[in-house]
View 1 (cartoon, rainbow, N blue to C red):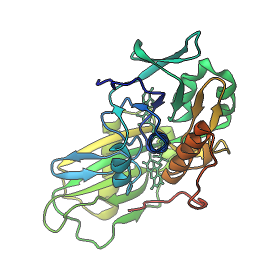
View 2 (cartoon, protein in one colour; view 1 turned 30 degrees about the vertical axis):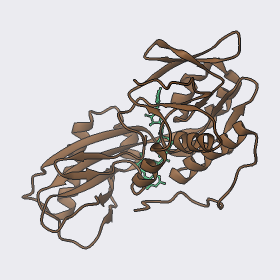
View 3 (cartoon, rainbow, N blue to C red; view 1 turned 90 degrees about the vertical axis):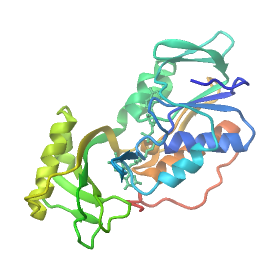
Length: 295
Ligand SMILES: Cc1cc2nc3c(=O)[nH]c(=O)nc-3n(C[C@H](O)[C@H](O)[C@H](O)COP(=O)(O)OP(=O)(O)OC[C@H]3O[C@@H](n4cnc5c(N)ncnc54)[C@H](O)[C@@H]3O)c2cc1C
């Protein structure tokens, strides 16, 4: 991990849309931030994987450029799983990564993760943790499938009316002759009932359902992987854009504060930045619904 030369004022845990939007606003106003994320790359549930010449967006599709643009403007330490926070007698925050304390101390800390992961770090601020108990998230099981040839059909999105497979999305890329990527999403009920199943077995099941539904009997995929989103989509949001304790210097944000979807995550992150800065939030419009499949 590369540590910044000047000790950052604010530590942001989580480089998803919410954490990055918060970080960008703070940096714009001249604050020094350091973002930490346990993943290999930023984006969180705006997830992207490149395999065998194929690109898969196996979380929220259509937001990759937005994430790349945000993440180019803020310092991010990847592969850093934050396991604890401690407040010093001087009122500054120490961050623990994989059980080890980091040397730098921060004036403020932002938690930009799903509520269950946020709550695990909030023993230091029980008043902030309590409202999170009413938030519920639902899991989503997904499969990434690389087909040897394009399906040759004109649609990019297929909705299924069956118990396990809910939808399939064609992935971006040149699909005239070469391989073609699809991401399959399990239904809410199937995801909930099978969340502890091995993702490879889930991927195989979803692929079989896709294959049977589309009559692709002779097709063998070039690539097949499953992914488990344990906290995939917001079911019951908190009902407020973010939480912030100015005295302690700690705040939380994420899609789940306001609703389900990337736009809610971005709005929540920006709202928390405004609270930290003590300025009114600049609003670009009202979000009425999570954008489904923006691409
Ligand atoms: C399969 C799927 C499809 C979706 N489709 C759509 C769609 O079509 N349209 C739409 O608008 N939304 C969609 N969504 C929802 C959208 O992805 C989320 O609303 C949004 O990305 C949430 O952003 P966030 O920043 O709040 O959280 P996240 O993206 O979850 O970011 C949290 C970050 O915190 C990190 N983290 C967690 N714990 C720690 C720790 N202890 N230490 C360090 N880092 C940590 C994680 O690695 C992650 O990067 C979809 C989600 C899924 C799962």
